[in-house]
Image 1 (cartoon, one colour):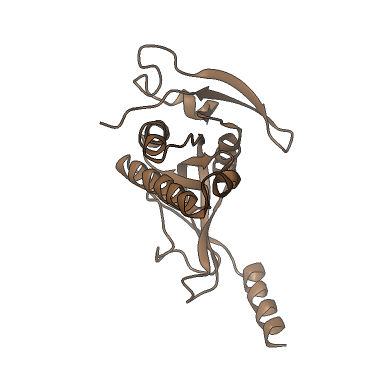
Image 2 (cartoon, one colour):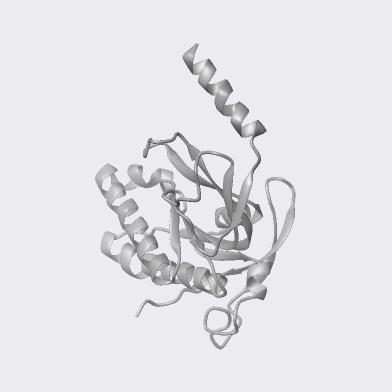
Length: 230
């Protein structure tokens, strides 16, 4: 009965309490003082990068548990270091997948450069060192997002942030469609500066159209190019 009472009282708070939304210019984390377990949220225009290992469910079968664990650890380490180097923040680990979040005027360029450098590191560092042929896919989109905190208060193991909007959802879908490539939304492509991450002397991007599981058709751009880490 205590659990039933707690659930009803908490949901009544969510339903009846007015929602407080504040603009932000930073990428928040779970310790952000403006995000509580009540009806509070932060909003901003973010760019999202999802990087995903293809056919990761077979890694332990191919290489054994210990080597698979080392591959996962190396993959995540590469992602965190590269994303942070390009002024982004990792805000989600999901087994074989990482979500990077970027903010500011250069957010799309930083997300694309991160994706290209991660691909380069996988191809030129991880695979040779582990004698593997790991293949990754990246997806990028940007847009207005509402960030809110979910889970249980005063319990560090049971809380996280939820990112509500189109951009993170589409970036996730695009990463699912990418095989040894990076796919970005047409909106992200339009705002990229004409530099090495867009042309590099040639047109590195191929336009394509994808149909999401929802049946929605979206225009996007795909590249297999990477960017060396110097």
